[in-house]
Amino acid sequence: MRYLTAGESHGPQLTTIIEGMPANMTLEQSAIDTELKRRQKGYGRGRRMQIESDSVQLVGGVRHGKTTGAPIAMTVENKDWKHWQKIMGSEPISEGEQDEMKRVITKPRPGHADLNGAIKYNHRDMRNVLERSSARETTVRVAAGAVAKSLLSQFGVKVAGHVISIGGIKSAKTSFDSIEDLQDVTEQSPVRCYDADASEKMKEAIDEAKKNGDSIGGIVEVIVEGLPVGLGSHVHYDRKLDAKIAGAIMSINAFKGVEFGIGFEAAQRPGSEVHDEILWNHESGYYRKTNNLGGFEGGMTNGMPVIVRGVMKPIPTLYKPLQSVDIDTKETFEASIERSDSCAVPSASVVAEAVVAWELANAFTEKFGNESMDRMLSNYHQYVSYSKEF
Ligand SMILES: Cc1cc2nc3c(=O)[nH]c(=O)nc-3n(C[C@H](O)[C@H](O)[C@H](O)COP(=O)(O)O)c2cc1C
Ligand SMILES: C=C(O[C@@H]1CC(C(=O)O)=C[C@@H](OP(=O)(O)O)[C@H]1O)C(=O)O
View 1 (tube, helix red, strand yellow):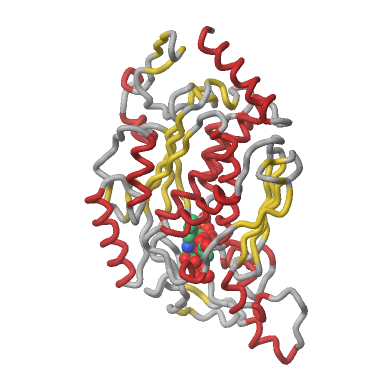
View 2 (view 1 turned 90 degrees about the horizontal axis):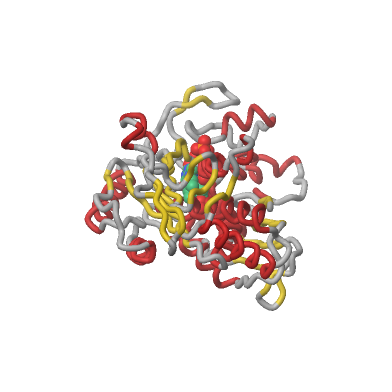
């Protein structure tokens, strides 16, 4: 499977085209819109989120609530477009109007894509960079992830993302009764954190950062249950599924690191306290006593839940000035005040769910075929019985 996205932050709409979803899969717009609303909700977002009310239009590949096997095309409208039509229009503009209409950006923000993108693509107006590097694009990635989740749900796979730290405040609750319990509690938390006390402190930390014209980052975790053994492969570097998932997490705007299971903590422990011992019973087949490796060995799923974490740096656009250089005058400036989020970690946990779901759905189609849903399901059930008794 593959998908592309197109569209600018303040352009008319965002678009995604997905290719390779099986035919006859139930796919409802409401399921996709639910995910888009979840992405918009997190505490710490700026005024833009009050303007947008994201909803998808399914414009290809779906008839009467079922996929046809053709590419699935979806669009999401940017409601803010009406304020940007002149600046972001695709039509050429006359010379006299240029300065006013283009509102040229020559002051790069440290931490954003502005300067690197401008040099690389030879743009004297850095709006041509920031419009596409904006995390507005994650809207349609979440839409594609919602389609992936619909596929995974056919196999009983559950995906939950949550926030485990913001601005140095950590969730003290690290174990859950079930993935449903985790989902129920975090959906009620303004910062998508399982620990109610930590949630309150995280909110205060976000308020404090905002008051100081600053921003804060954090850590998100995605847990996936119900996976079979053997998604991905050990045979070639570019077929290792943990590597693909790590790449997908790193592709989310502002993410700077990834770990699986106990992750970086593994460097401190001896092997006897890291590797997960193997057990077997009739009901479950092979399983592990612990899950320190976060569900992966040899680039393949081992049937235990996938546990992956990603670290998000603080948002680059600050009301508190940071030193930078104007690319026209080469003069140092210190104030670039733009509308911005002060913390987007809660929203990013929803994006992380989406990108992980996509990689797993892709691995399902590679292993069990992707022409029709019933064929895929019968291949899957046959394989699951085989692997239990292996
Ligand atoms: C959901 C979400 C919202 C974001 N909101 C903002 C924002 O309001 N202002 C900003 O400067 N960066 C924001 N970012 C981060 C930038 O998009 C990101 O730092 C930029 O694209 C540069 O890429 P890099 O940080 O991955 O190197 C956001 C990221 C995410 C995931
Ligand atoms: C629009 C979204 O996020 C945006 C991501 C973003 C950035 O620089 O990444 C900058 C802000 O956009 P604006 O400059 O219009 O306020 C965020 O609001 C969204 O998540 O839907």
